[in-house]
Amino acid sequence: MTTWDYDLFIDGRATASDGDRRITVVDPATEEVIGSVPDSTGTDMRRAIAAARRAFDEGPWPWLKPSERGRVISRMADILTERHPELHELIVAETGATVGGNNIGTADFIQCAGAVGAVRWLGANAASAIDWVESGLPAPGVTGLGGNILVREPAGVVGAITPFNYPFQLNLFKVTPALVAGCTIVLKPHPWTPLDAFEIARAATDAGVPPGVLNVVPGGAEVGDELTGSSLVDVITFTGSTPTGRRIMANAAGTIKRVKLELGGKSARVVLGDASEAYAATIGFTDVLAHCGQGCVLQSRLLLPERLRDAYVDGVHKAFADVRIGDPRDETTTLGPLIRAAHRDRVEELVQSGVAAGARVLVGGKRPADQPRGYFYEPTVLMDARNDMRIAQEEIFGPVLTVIAYDGSDEEAVRLANDSIYGLAGGVVSSDTNRAFGVARRIRTGMISVQTEVNGSVLPAAVDDGQGPGWGAHPGPIGSSGAFGGFKQSGIGREWGGHGLAEFTELKAISWS
Image (cartoon, rainbow, N blue to C red; front, top):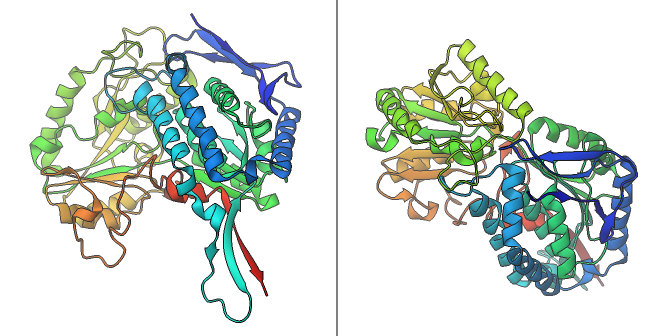
């Protein structure tokens, strides 16, 4: 069995930690040790921040042309592609992502090749994506002698903190735009899944990223607080839970640094009253299969018209019978493991709270008897739930779907969907495109999909919902290639696309007379 052991990566090279403790990394499907990294200290983090600060202040990375930085990123994508077999093996071992079965959330489709493809696009298009960084923009309303331009410049030193669910993808989705913008970075991966971050740093260095521009320091809360509170760090970008996001905001407030947060979700998929029984029969069930439900954008709350309840019960029972739980390396597996035993315990506790509050387990709800090793949990559907239950309000982050029956009216659907502290993603299912878009506009969430029985998934530009200017003004994909982020306590700011790239720049006005 392959094992992966790393030292810290600071100032362009592997570096020993100031301490002697190490973090052991295990395969969640087998519970076997697959590698280790240093359990970093505050001193380690300060060394990494100092290296990133020096690399930014002394250059040359921030002042290269975007096209020059783009060529380095393109080489990085080539190197990652060449190393795909070993990266794929590492990602499966580290995260438990499946190699086959359901396509959404598998090791390659999102975690590995899909993420590298997005990096390749950004490298190839770096100059056009941020041509405004080089050339400046004329300032409106300038009068009198002289002139004025607006320019965008690299924001400075970025502290990036990432979660355990899609570590390779999310590390790349923070590191690459920051690099293209000209920033330097200290990356703190989650202690459960720290290994692939070092492979990203190795690829970046081999591609030509200068020493100090990208540093990797794993660890827990101590090193996270050191990073988010440092006066030498200009931007914090974090993906993870809402409680941790609140802590980061409070810690960063002392130095008034920019904070970009992509936090939790309890996204609702709304089945409208005009949907047919056949179309709605298993809506939402595949969401809980995607990476064992460990995804912030998964639509884990299903709002179902009362009249479709019986058809849905029948459909889910049939779908559940086809689920194969087990080794994520087996092409026929549709559901892999949760990341750790402690995380599975939390999922179980939340399911039990739902049952105690009156919800009914339709399918699943327990550990599979034929999997004695690994952190497996059956895909679970909870019927007869109410929107005030914990299972409807808290992010479970596991293979659990909460089904809430409602009267079928659009008004009640919108009210229930918006009754949440979160607003990350969502979906609307209908047989009428315009009706679906009308409801989608009223749901307070950062990303929402629309599905119709006739057209499948449709784009905003395809309809006129009659709700005023701006609708459909910027049609295009959401997610990794668009503006990824949420409303309310699901976060602040956006990732990827032009909006995400702008998060790593500062606007400067230069005038003369």
